Image (cartoon, rainbow, N blue to C red; front, side, top):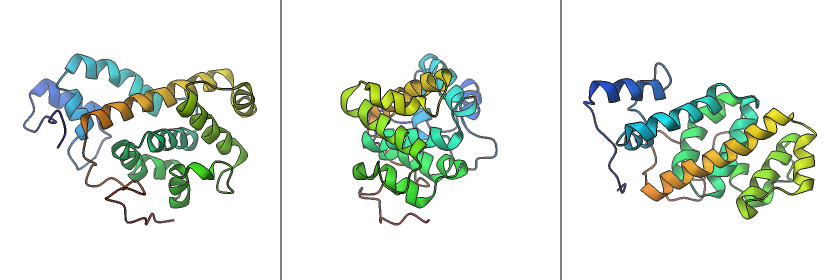
Length: 195
């Protein structure tokens, strides 16, 4: 049970309108529990919307790279909620396969054959940031071989943002969305991710 209950419908008109902005058009399920909890503080939710939607909809990183960063960050923080939301929809749309998604949860696969050198550099950088809150010169140089300065700034903000989102979902004890993909190694996981 979440520590703060998500809002339930019917929503006040202003909250309903805000929640609709947060969800992609045509979605048939309720707005995400995370969004419905955040709207218990509409001002905070509004401030968070600008950065979150900007990173997802207007970023400079290729979508697949963005989703690798999100999947690895949320997997490393043990955030089954957010990992599952992205794995079920956005990661697949960006081109990640079941094998890629499983690899984001395996700490030993950073140098594995599933990743291109560019994506391995992302995985290694996320791991280093997670473990040390710093990025070494070799990690920076590996990323710099593939990304421009503006993309490198976005990478750092993206990894930090999804660590924040993970703290929020984990701290609130949010239950996974029923339609989300189970994080491998958790109670809901049957260790099967389609290829």
